[in-house]
Image 1: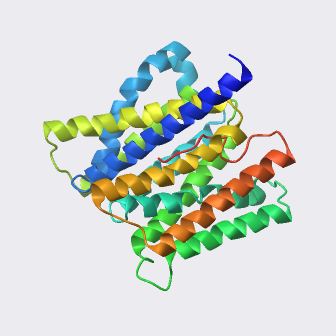
Image 2: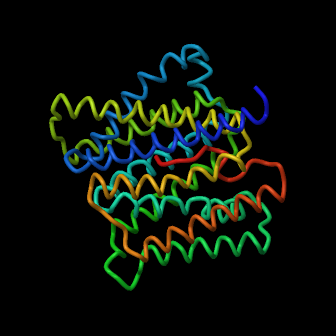
Length: 300
């Protein structure tokens, strides 16, 4: 495959992966209107494990279940599981586009955490992009209006957890994808089991199928995004992750009849601009992976 064909294929895989993540988000929002977050996490994780198990046996069970740097793996799983639970909790109250707008602020958090925890140098231009991102979050939240609510704050915390998961992932670049995904799925399963006592609604056969499909769609989306980043440079394919906002607007309006406020749209534009600026600055500074590249893109 030529470099051009690889890049085009990578872009196509990223677009497909983001579309699948959007469908995953839509199904999740639809299901948490009836079922508890714990149920959604358990059913989603069990279905994902069915897909993962053949890859685990191919790689080797011992290698998968005995990862390197277990304490860091545990932190990544903790933040990742908490992030997924908070996403479903937030999206059960907020419009889909609002939730995704706040989640796309994660790369801004990554820069701050990388500077504080990893000692990475952040120049003035990056801090300016970070400030722009936070202005976008502030505009989107509209703290003087009714939109500053507990669900909105939950979404902010969830985006921070997502960034913390990415930071942990940056330190685990040598860990195979199968190992990372397996432990992430097991963590979400345990989180779901822990939340099950807070409520249970027996699903219909149709909804049980949708709950299972949720995990399969999410797994396929992760595979598409991971493959995209292996086929082409992150600077080529990562900007296409922001089509997530477009799908969130389309699905939110078409399925849930939600339309974001002007403040949310302006905030989304600022957050996307900040994320793209950080990506460009990262590319100019060094050929090292960008903050987003470490774990791929997309929603939980």
